Length: 289
Image: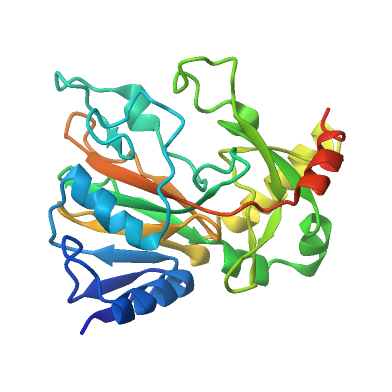
């Protein structure tokens, strides 16, 4: 029988007694899904996975969603993305190292955003390089009432790289930056709990506000959400696999490791569900300047 051991932080749990390389029994999968929604991050240790094995394990949690950036796509398994700080010759790859650094959730710039992401460690540096997570349910519920009233009910424009254009060089055609509209405060489709869905990395603006008013409100919300009491960090070991929530949590890689030491992962993404009905989308689109 599997054991699920919560961390002593605001999120995260380690799963014991389950091998990701083997089929999962229905009862265990039910427990995993419940723990995933509750703790937002699940950790599986000491099980080296190939790209194909990661795909097979990932499919237990839903339909895979291929990433739009083809530059780091696995050459044999297109559902898998390679996260690496070094190129094929062992040289430092700044673009690769920078990817995922900064608070965000995955694929909010698509109208059907990600439900979850899985990351499997194949090489880790001797120090640093953790992945930080932040509980956006907790951030919303603890938010001052005056700030909550100003952001709740608003809709936001998301685009790859957000208002600061943080992902230059990722797309083969930079003129086709994807964008989407989602609620600033999202209601979780399974729990019904609200969480902060806007994020510093991929949010462009609050729809219906001027740029200056939008920037000021975003900055205030983000300052609140980055408080340490909402955060927990995954300290990586080789053969770790982590699955995390994108509907109710932020994450960010850390660049505090020796830059020429390898930090490599295999990654998959699980497709989520739309957040806005089509008629509302059309109406909101007319308000974007």
